Image (cartoon, rainbow, N blue to C red):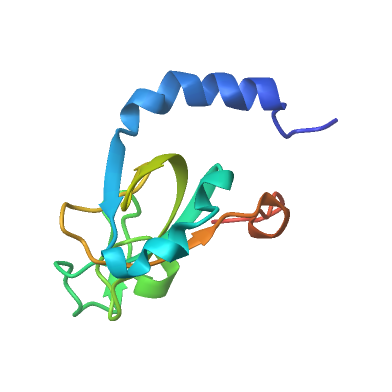
Length: 131
């Protein structure tokens, strides 16, 4: 028995939940314009950004949903010693120096560190586990 959902089920779920993930814009410095060449060929990207307003003083945390402490590196919390964030996003479009994406979780003005194309062939781990 195959426990993984088929593509039609996943697509239907995404279409239903899409409104929970509003579009967001990331604007680059014109210095990097040439770096955007061919980026529109990809449907999804990795965005690396610096959570400049996040606390940096906890190495253990007790998330409300968990009820006990866990090491910061075992959590997805923005509170971390080095607040670099990584988001797999859907690329909606590029106009000039502005990327429009969906599914990024940051506040306005968050510094963008890097952009990389998402490759399902190497970036996806269907057998990944979590507690």
